[in-house]
Image (cartoon, rainbow, N blue to C red; front, side, top):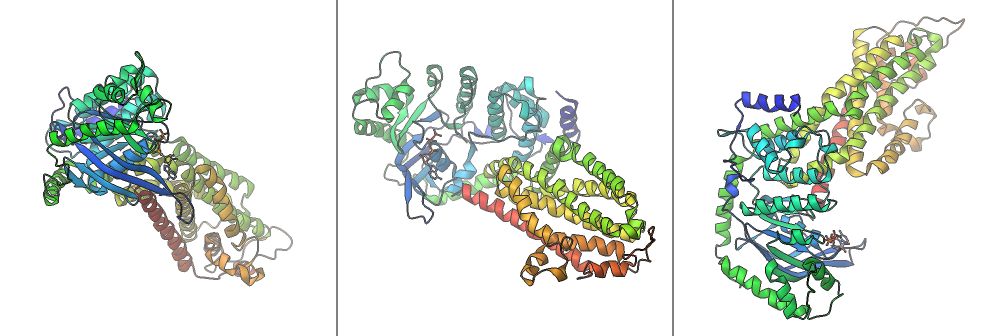
Length: 626
Ligand SMILES: Nc1ncnc2c1ncn2[C@@H]1O[C@H](COP(=O)(O)OP(=O)(O)OP(=O)(O)O)[C@@H](O)[C@H]1O
């Protein structure tokens, strides 16, 4: 275990941070889940998606699917690729709402997608973990975000106990990026079971794992189910050894349920319908052959026999099969209110969430090579390089044109050195955010606020280090107010670049973003007033120039350096045209606006980009929930 981990956990214990998670004896789950199982049944589930641009053509993915999953048992969905397993799992998590028809009930009470999202925890196939966090830190932050800290048990104990039960003690100090596939899967289960999830839904938890790791993961899920959690997972051709762990199986074929019932009755049911499973044959493989039409028999009869298991299930959990719920919806609301108030007590408060997110992001930023370890030295290095190339140009009127070019280089460097790392990093970060948000870890506002705050120190440090070096070496006027004005512009352009990169990362894949960011910036650069002056531009291009933040940043620096009645510059050559600062500004068609307006425009751009990012994140969440 790393020293850092120890410090992290000890610090919490010293602060008296104790977690109310019930006693984790030999069990993996929190106490609340035990004996509080959720029986789930669903009827006539239909889900379709639009496949043509105009939305006229739809594809039926789930067709009248009926089934049930027992509480405190390991339920699996099997079926050929494309049968609709992921779509069914997403529907049961409450992630599908707009194109989903049919009813889903929990303990006999009809629920909507919001209820389902609160009740379930979803572990997708491609579960993203923050690569810079160790196993211990990942579990620690999950516990702090998902469970209220109060009197009871030490947080370190809880994390250690969960890690022990998941068989992750050996890799507590290993970063998520370096974990094996099986360890990553177990960790992804761990972060969801630290709280009181009563229904755990997993999409192909064994995909990409060897048989030993697959068995380990499925055994873990079985233990979880025995301790009170309803486990539902999809699985591709499980081995015979894994099959013995499964309690109930739902077979999906071409978007329809073929069988839903106990695993032990599966062979017998199919046999009755004319599908005889050869001896020593893996029953799941056999069923998939039936689902893909490779075996002959009466599929309708299988469905009919299987419906008896459904009726037996409804009877056993006292649910009327005519859709009359034993409890009314009001009862559900009451129960939900009760659960919600408990949830409020158990879950971290808003301020605690922010605190945890800030702390977590700080660790990630500190360990990130591209964002931190490389970025700061690069800013200082480029500042030095600029200083060497444009040494004392600012003091010599004969070198004014080159000096002006160096300002433009300041802006260009600060923009691209900030925007590109943000573009690369944000897709991973946003995938983790969306998963955690959908599993009710924290809200979008809390996440967004933490992101702005954690990005700020580097936004201040990098341009400051760059500017101190470059400003001094290039011989700019050593006057406090001029330096501060240039610093403000550099800081704002750095903030703007960060937002621009994050926005591009939120919309595009990094590969496309790497092309889009420069492509969008070229016209803005071209009409910034450096390559072509405003008075020389055709009036068609005024609007592009008017929105170019480069133009305002460039003019801001020009005004800061040459404005405010600066005295005439020294001329080291025989004759210098650009000696008088006022003339230099008018030669560049400046001032076109005042310095405070420039600041307002740059701030306006930053606010606009943040609002845009926020909207995109909302839209991406809504898209998942469609
Ligand atoms: N948004 C979508 N637009 C178009 N088709 C879709 C969409 N989502 C799913 N499908 C289609 O629906 C079918 C079922 O998809 P789903 O991912 O649920 O299958 P699956 O059983 O989980 O497959 P696999 O085992 O290969 O992961 C597939 O044919 C898929 O192409």
